[in-house]
Amino acid sequence: MLSEFALARAGWRRSAAVAEARPPLLECFGIRSLDQLRRDYLEVARHALRRDRYTFGLSSYSLLRPELSVPTYLGFMRSDGLAPIYNLFDRHGGARHYSQRVTRRWQRDFRGGRLSYDEHNGTDLVCPIGTPLCAAAPGIVVLHRDRFLRGGMTVAVDHGHGVITQYTHCARAVAAVGQRVARGDTVALSGAAGIDLVNFVPLVPPHIHFMVWVDGVPSDPFLAAGEAPRPGIWLDGNDPRPSGPLAEDPAATPFSPVDREALWRVADGCRDDQINAEIDRCKSDLTQLAALIEDASFHDEFAFAAELRLQNLRGPLTDDRLAAAMQIRLTLPLPSAHYCGAYCADFRGSAPANGG
Image (tube, rainbow, N blue to C red; front, side, top):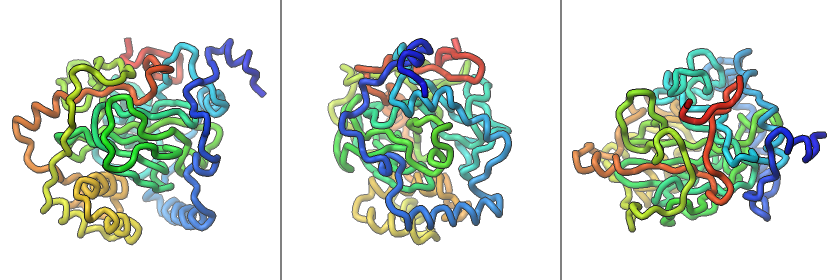
């Protein structure tokens, strides 16, 4: 058993950010019932045998990081206040497909490195279960989606002009759908929810899968060397830092536009009963429905014909909308009272997130 003294010598301290009333353990892992587990694992078994989804291989074992996971499960964070980045956005396939593979063959991160896995479409920030997750920019909560086979509880915040952020593997949503949030407001509590974490407890570190969408396409908040700026990147270049409200933040964030014709075309083309039930629950709120369809048509691509995937549900990108979207800059979705930044937790040593 690791002692607190040994962890302190290794650069860890007990996190004071963790909520005092941490959710029950099963909720932290996104487990709602035994019937749900049985149904979901049967689905995994079927597709694993076909090798079309839930693909594992020898390369997957490099994702087991006990040196990160064990202290974090014990409620510790880095003493320097930096959140380890467990995986970066896969520049090879992260914006094109999602088949729930966890192989490491073709992946490349923004630096040209390998701190990612195939088709990974977000930034994984390691944090103890129960850590408050903060809005990365002002916005409106537009979606709660709870799917064990896709990371458990997910909360989505609309920052306007087609830019949406998602917070996945949550133990519990805190901010309600429709609630306006300022930069730094708590939207959820972190967990280790979803089949990908549950299968490998305690060797995969609990983390927040932080994802950026721009007009329905996953986007990397980091910029490669020489890459032009775009909507939804970090406020401080490639050095993500936490923050509360900023003077330049808008007083009120508009909902992102919705192309009703495109939205209903994709929604009506869904061929999965469970997702159709989610669609039925959102039909009265087009902003919520658009966020759901963007997520489902990408992450549950099996449920939609190929021509319906990655459709722009936000209408034409006018010069005015692009200019407004370019102003949306993100801060670290972790509490500023406890975290000062993040670093790339590569397999050989550590480096600042900007690679410098």
